[in-house]
Image (cartoon, rainbow, N blue to C red; front, side):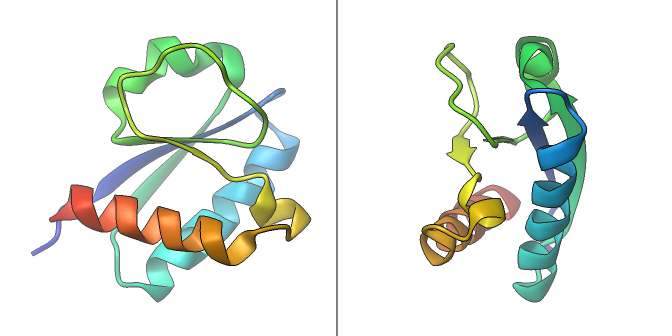
Length: 98
């Protein structure tokens, strides 16, 4: 059985765009049969929360070093490059969940 993938979705305020992105990420993973638990945070919380998750997804540019895969998911909100981002999410999460 595939293990649950823990995902951190971060945006500037931890409220607006991360909520939209969080729902989109859940939907993508559900559609592809990947069990996930999605957490929301602000960009400034990434360093303190990255050790508790498997993947970090951001809605804006994040330039600090992270020790987990980082996926930019603004396209899930804007619609630009959405298919490419969905593919990256599925591939990354499948690798992690085994």
